[in-house]
Length: 443
Image (cartoon, rainbow, N blue to C red; front, side):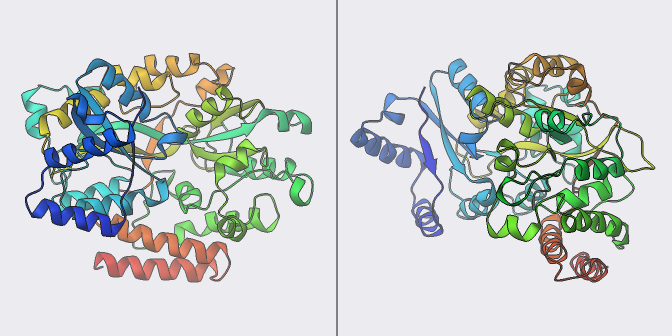
């Protein structure tokens, strides 16, 4: 079925729609208007008499993490049409915030990009508590292995775990083979990783191949500082981050990774860097597995690639990683609570987990069966070591469930940039970070 893609509104349009809602407009009215518009353009839409459920997604065209479940739900429920409100990942939280501030009935279902934003939405009463639905359907939360309880906020459930991602190391086997260097192991320290980055760097100018790649996110430095579980990104003292920033700057200075300023100025995305074979290694989340599998299936890439367990600090054993959950929730303003819950329940079910596993997507339901499905999927890299790379012994959230986390992330991002472009020294940057976080937290 061809999906009707809905472009996220501008602020003016959102506020106008919000005004119509306040003046008595309803989703049924909006649906009738949408149907009329669809008929005029040759689309049928809700004119078919189907129930229309709106869901928010980001970068839906470039990843299978949403569409596979949407398609499966529509196939099981032919009387329902899913209206997709898609936004770029960078603009998602901002656009969603604008939409929810208008208190309009669309969207019904929200895929939550960052758990910190879930807390903000809960504080603003923009999310529907789902404990009554869970109780009524006697939903077994044990299948999520504690993740559902971790998503509770002030003792209330606002979401279910949809997917689970953690960091691994991607590498280009062909580049390693050409350099005559052994592939990264599943028990490699960060120092060994730095040494490999030096060995795999070659060439000059536009033909240069970098030993590794750090995307511009602050997580690509701060994650390794919290990997051992001793700290989080919300602390009173940030001196523990100093050696990690020093190493990131050293990689940049030595030319083993592209420099931060170039990446930001040219708006270079990590996907293109790895796909175009401009780097031999790249630390990135497990969500990128599905992207690479999809890329190979479409014929966009043909080189051999693999994954290894993310490197670990010297004083930490292999298997420690950092990650985050993607929750799925219901808008407090939906006028289709039961239908929205039915979709949320399906999207976070074992059935959906099997569907997503075939796409290389890890879900909130960890299981050996899902791991086997992913490993057996077409275009997943061959070799037992790639499957072993997906196993972990310790999992730290990249950011804690703190009500102030989004404010703190803003500061983290600002300080990160100033350190990486060397406008601040590491010491000065971390001192400012400490001062501003203390102000936010009231310490």
